[in-house]
Amino acid sequence: MPGQKTIETDGNFKSFSTAHIPHHERVEFWEAHNADALIGLDIRPLHTQTLDAQQHNRETSQIRAAKVLGSSQLVERTPEMIKKHPTESVALFFCTQGDSFYSDENSTHVLQAGQLLACNADRPFLRGFGIGVSEMVLTVSMDAYTRITRVKPLMSPVKLTFGSSLDTQGEITAATQLARLVDSALSAPDEHTATFEDQTLSWLESLFTEGHPDLTQLFQQAQHFIEVNLAHPNLRRSDLARWLHLSERQVGRIFSAQGTSFSNELLLRRVQAARSILQAEPHVPIADVARRCGFGSTSYFSRSFRRIVGHSPTTERAQMRV
Image (cartoon, rainbow, N blue to C red; front, side, top):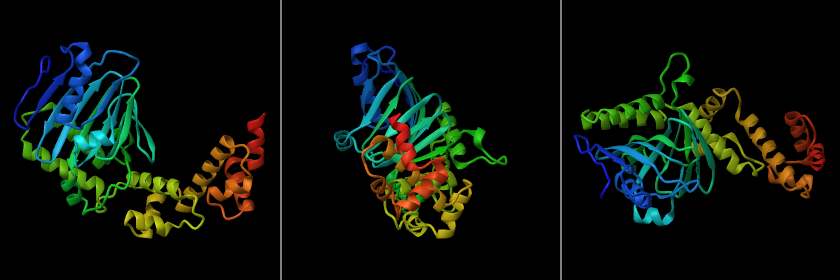
């Protein structure tokens, strides 16, 4: 490919830049490099600007790592792209500067500097970078992932913090250690390949297994479960425990670490959902709003809403009409 700068060293280290590629060919080359070295994506520059992008890659038998910089763009993993370029892997996106968003059919997440998101790379998603790309990406084969997690599935995208500013009591989290390892490995291509792979898999095991639970990760998963199921009036902590493959006592610790409880979080999410409906659908009866959000009775809904919001559902709707 003309204009492509590629360096091969121990550990399959590569470097790519669009700098010397004609402007009208840059998207095509950028997509081709991503499909070959990382993840196949449909890519669209934003604001009709010329695409500028560069990527440093490292690959082992089970892992691909990349450091990515670029101008504003949308990247999409469509069903057609998945069929054309399957990865059979889990992807982790580490936001190092600015912010970005990730969206799939079930949820949307905003990533800020110091946060990462893990997802199944063979499920459709859309990502956007409004002020440019600045991130690290790590993919691990599904075989390796299922082995180190004891075949525990990644039920939904998981957002974690790897920035050291949020470490507590001097502890360095597995997410922080993993981010540092990937950054170091991409900066030092002569580092032994086997060492990099072994250390990466070790920190991934700490990140995802019950033996070294990351409570922030589990809380994010719990919140997603509640949001999807809050319309069920008989939703219980035991339902969440079965979904997470944990005991109810372990589930209790997840919420306790965040200064709350399952019942309080469920009630808060129900009231937030109800408030959104009241604002977006002004003609829906209050009783129907309560039912759709999982409240057993209108009176309980009204009491709960007043306690959390500070006024009644009726007042909330009346304020929207002013």
